Length: 246
Image (cartoon, rainbow, N blue to C red; front, side, top):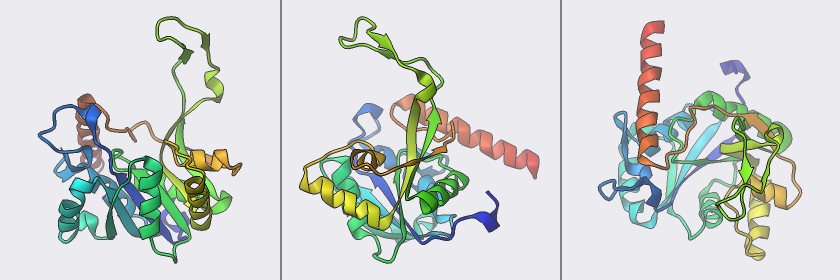
């Protein structure tokens, strides 16, 4: 997408960083968003990508309760946090964390983009493509068509069946919604005690269409220690390409 074609619809970005990071293993007491990666914190990489989008007017960080004070202090002087308007404490579930982030966002925003802070390599280009799709259709998410054959096993020991991978997609973030729509669905979910692990699932549950935007293989989610090593390698590769192309 060229700069002239980039969407200008006023957007609030909600970066969710409230998890316990238990699968990352020993990290010196740091949760994933506060780990060092390529000279920045993991969460600063994602912030920088969203801040580079003209449509993104503000960023709301939804942090683990024990990280709120530290992130607020860092937001005061980190250039990557220049568009951070609020740092709020997350809830017991992802749905509650997103609800709190949306509540802290400006009421003037037209779109709300929800992104996992544990995906630090998201590109501005992918963000803008997803914003454009949501501006046109109401809701959109980045996702990749599944390359691997997927087996179903009910007991974890024997294969029950094989799914048709031609219709399967691996969801990523950002996931973007018209602000009024997301606020309405979050209210309905709260009233019904509905908890989902994926924000687009709210639209699916309540019958709202969601547009698929082809994601990027490099938009990985940091889950295990090896993912951090892979992310560092991808960053080095990006830097090498920039040097060769300059």
